[in-house]
Amino acid sequence: MKTFQKIAIPFSLGVLGLLVLSSCSVGIPKGATAVQNFNADRYLGTWYEIARFDYKFEKDMDNVTATYSKNPDGTIKVDNKGYNYVKKEWKQSVGEARFVNKETEARLKVSFFKPIWAGYNVVDIDDNYQYALVMGNNLKYLWILSRTKELPESIRQRFLEKAKRVGYKTDELIWVKHN
Image (cartoon, rainbow, N blue to C red; front, top):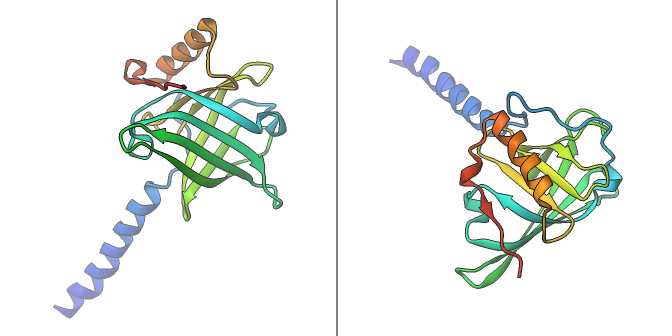
């Protein structure tokens, strides 16, 4: 019996550790490529969330914005705000983002609950840094962002087509209200 415990307990802890680590993935969906020659300084500032998938952290949220700024240590401060229209209250979540490889590749990892990190991959952005398509580490996370509360139809179609090619079910997107 003691031999079984000597094997079972470390094995169970190892499996548990692997499960925890796999939930902290900072990958990029298969078929997606992060923007190269990315200019992090141009990306800083406030973005309006135009569309997203429904997930627990942003459930029932409208008027969602994300503001990015540089921290003194070179990491990026992520300040997300939104209005929960069911609870009738503003919510805010502040986190940190770091580049996965180099600053000129738009592959980042973001954490709001350290030590858990998730992928944040800018896969499309217009030349003027006004509109961005962001994918998480898997097909459950997708955001369409804009510097204004509106998105031109041509950009909307471009982003939706790119997301569909990667495998996202874009008909399940929530189009965020800003009022």
